[in-house]
Amino acid sequence: MASRRICEKLEARIEQERRDNPQAGVRHRPRPVLGGRTPREVFEGECGKLPDRTTFRKEVSELEQILIEQACSRRERTAARRKAVEAVFLRYGLFKEMADVSTKLNAETVTN
Image (tube, rainbow, N blue to C red; front, side, top):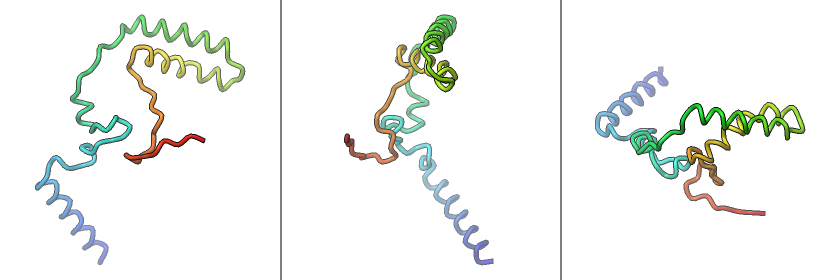
């Protein structure tokens, strides 16, 4: 009974906050993985030019075959397609590798 009242009070507070501040919410917080931008900024931001699909697929297939030939284990052979797609994305600038993937905004970079 007491937990039901707590839930009702919490729901009422959440609804009141949504009415008072419609811009507040999870999707409006800056995210480290998005370079400090909010998901809305990324969604509404400029979209770069995408590569031609046929060319993209051809490049991925060629790189995949090279990776399969160089593979030393079954795990490397099965990961060849994913690695080829990632490499082609990197080449086109559609994918960025970030060193710091922690959830802390002010994380320190430490090397051993």
